[in-house]
Amino acid sequence: MDIGDRIKNLVEEQTGRPLERKDELLGAGILDSMMTMLLVGRLEEEFGISCSAEDFTHHNFNSIEAMSSLVQAKINADAH
Image 1: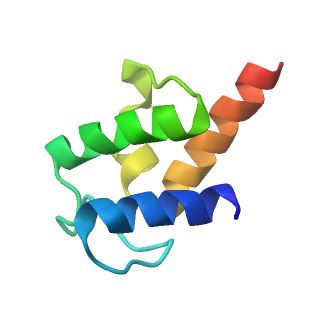
Image 2: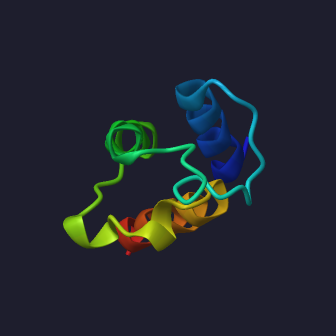
């Protein structure tokens, strides 16, 4: 299972609804600020990453695809 699939499963579990990787999550009200904070904790735990305040942008959390890019960048940065 790739990063996107793992994140998709986490988001679907948290929201209780099926989603596509490109679905708009914040703008459509699927994720709110509290759900996003809970999700960040789960992403940090699942992938062994740490998100900083600068990471909390609409761009990084508006879709599963965007979150996948953020997580992959964090993993790559930690590997170097």
